[in-house]
Image (cartoon, rainbow, N blue to C red):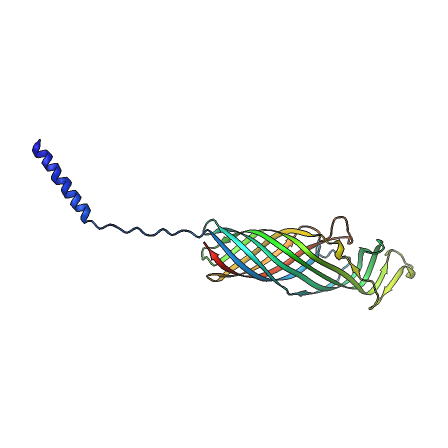
Length: 262
C-alpha cells in the first residue's frame, strides 16, 4: 500500500510538470459584430403628382414635363440583424417640383371661384411643387458580395408647403361640352386671366411605398436609386376639384455617407 501511494505521488508530480511546460494558446480576440450605422445623405428627386389611373386626364394626347432639380438633405439610422438583413429609418427634407404642358380634349374641373364644373379643351400649363419632411422605413437585403443591396418598404411625408396651379393657355372653356351652340364656348387666348390655383386645397400628408437598389462605392459611401409612389390623392377629401386622383410619384438618386458605425 505504501508503494502504491508513492507511485501515485510520482505520477501526479510528473503530470503537473508536463502541464506546466505545455505552452498556453493565446485566445483570439472576439470580433464584435457591427450592430448599427448612422449616416447623412443628399439626393435629387425627379417627379411630381401624376394622374391615376395613368392617362386619366380627359382626352390627354400629349404632355411635356420639365422637373426642377432641388437637392434633398437628411439623416439615417440603420440597424443590422445579419450579414444579409438590415432595416433603415430616415428623415429627409426635400422639395419635389415640375412644370408641365398638356394638350387635352376634355379636361373637367371645378372652378375655384365659382364652384361650377367646367370643361377645357386646348393647351394648359401646370405648375406644382411640394416641400416636405419625408420619413422612409425599409428593409435592405445585402447580396453575398457585400456591395450590392435591394430595399423595400414604405414612407410617410408631411407636406410643409404645396403648390398646384393650372393655367389654360389656348383653347375653349364651357359648362356644357355636349352643346352645339358656339355661344356656350368661351375662347381662351394667351394673356387671359383664367389660371386655377388649387394650392389651398392640397393635403398636408402622404404615404406610400418605396423600393430601390443600393451599391457601396467606398467603405463608407453608397449610391442608391429609388422609386416612390403615394397611395392617396394630393387633394383633401373635402376639396375635390378634379375628376381623377393625383398621386405623388418620383424617382430619387441618393448619395450617403456613414459617419458612425458601431
